[in-house]
Structures are given as C-alpha cells and as structure tokens.
Length: 95
Image (cartoon, rainbow, N blue to C red):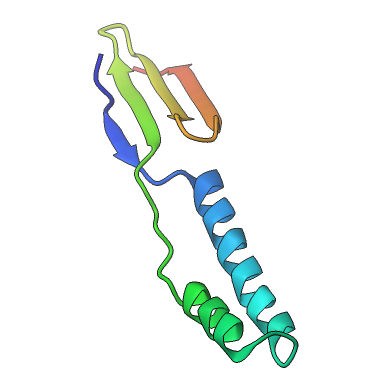
C-alpha cells in the first residue's frame, strides 16, 4: 500500500535545527580558545545548510456514506525517528 503523501517530519526537523544550533554555540565557545584553523573549521561547519528529508509518511481518507455518516482519518509515521500521530473523527450528518 502506498502513502498518500511523504513530507518532512516535525520531530526530525527539530532535531536537525537543534544540532545546527549546537554547532553554532560550539563555534562561539571556541572563539579565542582553539587554533585559528580549528575555529575556522567549526565556523564553516555551522554555516552548512540543514538537510531536511521527507521521512514522514502520511495516510488519510475522507468518507461519506449514503446514510450521511461522515468519517475522517489521518495517520503519520516517520521511518527515521519513530514519530507518529493519528487523528480520526466521525459524525452523523443531519440530512
């Protein structure tokens, strides 16, 4: 069964952003405390663009039966970090 959509995982994105901030903080701490070459390497590493992959699988459906029963279902799962989220809603529509 194929996914309805693949997108970026919010948990993975937060981890990438946190790692990026740690690299920036490391460069700040290194200033004047390590060799110029090591400091420059740290600065260059902190300027590398963050890479965001589409690891979040989304599946969803919207259904209406002939008797007016309506249902929405959504699920998301990241195959990298294990993040998951599900949502369902159903109701009888007034006819």
